[in-house]
Image (cartoon, rainbow over all chains, first blue to last red):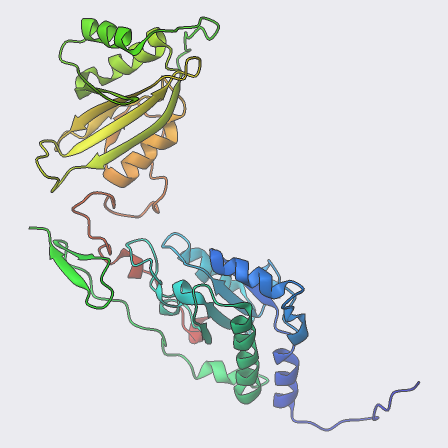
Length: 193
Length: 178
């Protein structure tokens, strides 16, 4: 049966590029903790992100255009994360998956980075500890909407985003003060002296 | 590395009291205590290496199964700042003994147990990394968990829980430069 393919099509290049890019997001799984398990479940047959064209997990950043940061990132890992992000070709997007990647989560200690958006640009945040696969799929769908709505062929939408978008680093904590964990409603400060 | 003259075929089976008596006969001010099956020997840093060597060679403790430290700053009724604990196991008899020593600033140096048990290598590096206790004679005393450029020793009790801003001390990558 012959398909009814027209001899030529007319379209704007931007929506065409967006259509192609949004439906073939190749994720870079930067999975460091339990969110990585949910990320694997999302890729597996029950939830199956192949339905949305994002099943091609590539372990080389050169072949990826979507970084999914799944899990907490410690100080020693952040230079690696930044290097991998820099190695990914344009256009590229980033999903910060779970509470730890987005804000540090419960790991409010000297070694854990309090949100990857302080140091790399992030497009989508997924709440949850860890998020369900449905939530990650929803974030990929939302990212597809974002690409369709704002993407351009030359990637000019990125050129305008030159400002740092995440929260600014905190001021240094005084050496003689520690913040005791436990009471999350009113952070308790304890003096050592 | 010096050769170890431990004859593994020779079974050293000795009740704990005998070990304690033998140790106390050789080393003068040695404190011991016992709680259920937890036997401890507290020694001064100057005698530590000889006690460990004696326990290994004469009493058959051929495995260093644990080595850790504690910071007793702000600890109720604590006299000394740091404690370093060695957990030794005799794999023939299954006996365990804990050897503890205490350290105070400014002299935070202990003899390395690497020449007795190779397993002390990374354990001593971890204690150095977390508490800043130096091990004299260690072949490669570097940080093991924290990055090389890290300043300070984070498990000390006077180190702030949220750090001194190290976790924010990275370049920020924006869309313009990526």
